[in-house]
Image (cartoon, rainbow, N blue to C red; front, side, top):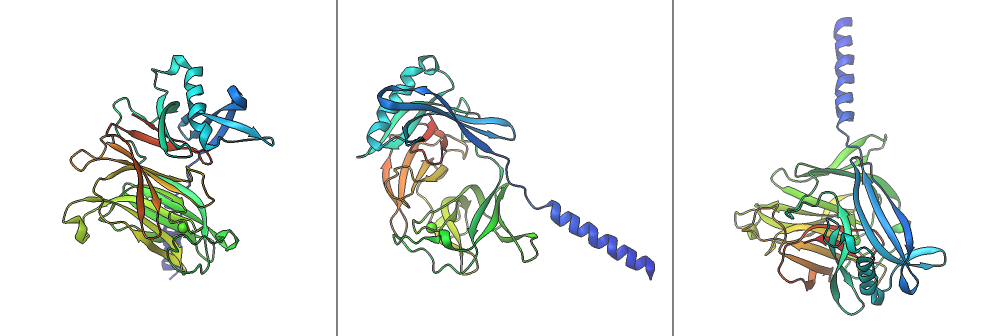
Length: 329
Ligand SMILES: [Ca+2]
């Protein structure tokens, strides 16, 4: 009898330890801006650096303006001249690995211009390199928070009760973890085994003030997939006490290589744009993209605002609060 009891206890402990070990730890990442000096017309030059567990991952030169003791993003009409000044300041970097391109809103249209940025994962041949495993910890809604997508109606969800949440991508599988009533992390949602998730972000994808999980995936199980693996953008959110689909984009005409969600135009408080590097189904999935595109939520889906000329594009990056999207070409 005693022997059985002992075995039971040991068995129980081992199982618990194994479950705990599987809880993903968020990435160790931090960013800081370095002040480099003055530019013309009262602008100030910053170097934004981003570190992860392997060291310096990215560094971008960014023109800013000093306002009430803070370095703030340039207004739309100054963004082009600010970038031009940076390239002129460092002519020795013009034909180096720092050479990059910026996409931004100049007040009247989307514009691209040369800039300087180091991206460790950018390869000379321009292939697309997305991390195979990534875990972030965020704060998400925890209570009843109304219906699904509310289109253009902006609500202040910041006052809602929030819960810690970990989003884990590992080898094409996406999982959402939240603590249960005793504080132990548990999986509350995971992507279908047949899906291949490439990239995710957490932000207000449908402009209603609530954050969502937005991700790009390949799947072949929908009527619009026609038995082929097709690229889709999906949006999931915490709705009525669980994770639910908010918006499931249909099979895209051109597959997503990389995307970035952010308030790049900075034209309103919840006015996000989705920047997408688009490839072609006939290319391999790590081939560089052929187009850079800008999309905006219109109440029921994403509407195309701008498309680049055909070219070769990869390594899409942005800095929170700065109105530039950087890529290599
Ligand atoms: Ca939202």
